[in-house]
Length: 338
Image (cartoon, rainbow, N blue to C red):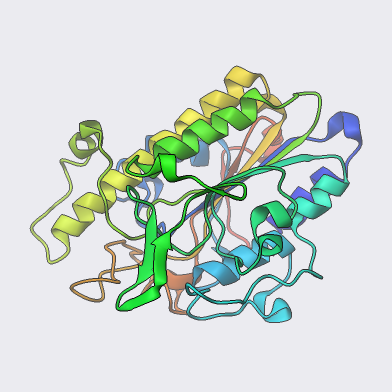
């Protein structure tokens, strides 16, 4: 199991411990990546799959919080009470139990420096449930299941008490980041973490991307619309599929930018990068919210279901620390996210 390999790497001798990057993509469907014959252009992910290891029969939970709890704890969600089929809704007091150690807490105890960027969604009723209370030395991102890519708000329609601003630097609301597209902020934070990191110490970075979760919002740069010009807009989900493509294209570019950051810092050769989607893609099963426009073809159904399209996830392992003998192949054996 991949999580076990990460823990084993963290327990190695100090002189040989690699940097570990767990990169979670949100709602990326099986056919939302080029190496699964998608119409979405994802050259960076395609190359990482080609030159690394694709986990082609890798399974997660059908929705977000359960998968993330398993990734953070190494335990199946039903063992920790995190098997919520509706994930953690705004206003909930549910959280990953404090007596269940997180990957960040374990690695930090073993001498790793720790940082998190992006989506948490594992509890936020008190600060001790948030990333800075669960082993991460720094955090920038949002705590709920989704938020607006520009104004950083989250809410449940017609429930005013469950609406508000949700974007944070550690324990401080980041009001100054309102109206900026989220991905630009995440990349700046990733750069800040690397700039301030001492390469003599091992780093664990949990980079939990917002893309391509709802709401469907096009990045501000025109280049991503141009890259998606070949997406067919004539179908019933055509317009939404086009917007989703621009978001996926921005995500792919950001992954490439991050790899270049690691190389510029001089730590790529001693880094193990694991990329995984948290569940299958959300398909357009409704004509409006909360449906999206992902594709899991040829797998059946999508996010929220226990069919293959809901639980068989896109996953790739790469990085300079990946043994050369393992590169350039797809692993067909069954693999779980714990």
